Image 1 (spheres, rainbow, N blue to C red):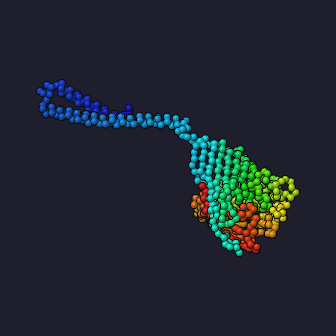
Image 2: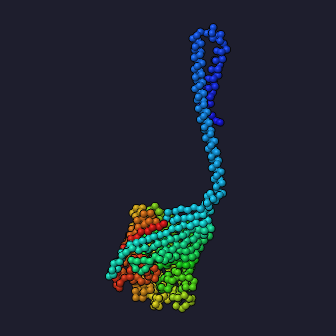
Image 3: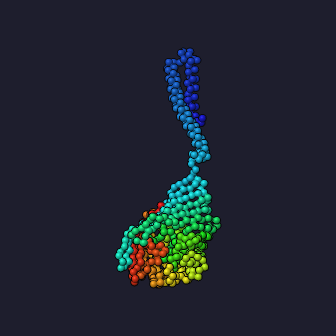
Length: 495
């Protein structure tokens, strides 16, 4: 038992006083004669008074000593109990680490903003993230001599599952969306769930990976950027015309901090030249109209921005700055029906180049695309109106503050590939609008207004997914009609 310096001093003083009292008392008892004959009454009274004072002091010191001993004892008892409790807790925790019934299996679950709900095994070998996307719109369309149309539209309602299995080098994703509905601007049917992405990736290290399944081939950059992270309400009509959609095949990728190269081959991608070619999106080996199809893309980036940063057309304030340059090439051969080596096979080739700039508060994106169709015919067997459709686009956004972004887009194209009567359909469309970010892209409101300055026939978009559900908010022009405009408001929720 340890004692403090004050406790030691108190005990020493008590002992000294006791000895003094005892000595004085002994002297008086041992020498009664002296006390009676040799000392006066005053001296005796003074001595007795002194002894009384000493005894009183001894009593006070004894009382204080008892208090100190009690406190010291309680402190010792508290420290001993604390040590015992710590020992018990340590033993329990050590035992619980080996008991699955006490801790279950250690799996973790939670929510990561912007990514979704996640599950992960205790050893980290298996994980799954679950998320979704909702885009709902209100559209007003004025197409000249036609009646003004307006109403609500559920453009996208998607769910996705992604993660890794066995270890983090094996990743996967499955994403699907409910059917977007009919060709009527004011109605929609969401009764069917359609698979979009369904693939697996093996990362071999050193920047090399292989992707297998259904996904978008590395063709148009505007289409490769997710619909969650577009600048305007919808992708451009130019992207809708050259739409690649989701394609089944295999992709080899090499990537480092500055360069990324991807090569893809599979069942083919849609082209503007023939409706039959669009079947490749959902075709299997026995219904695939293509003999072969190859797409390659190379990219280089400069600055501090990562590859992930270039997957978003919104460059937020305080974000990393950088420039990315990309070029893609397409070469494929297909028939109007399944089969190989037919003399009327169509050979499609194409090239596209793009630039993306992130300023950390402003963004710029531009690209040009061209395709050529040899022996291309319409579904009716007629020569196409324009075997060399091409187009270009430039768009930019600027943040006025952390949450409010203004943007503008201009797109131009000479199209009409599958329309012999309209070989020079002109896409000459301007769009302006703004984004208000409540919680970045997770909760975003977008309003834009666009006008096409020339006459544009839009039936060809039905073959590739825009006209069939009016996803872009435009309709087929009447003959010699121009200045069709569309006002679009959209609310996006990611979870």
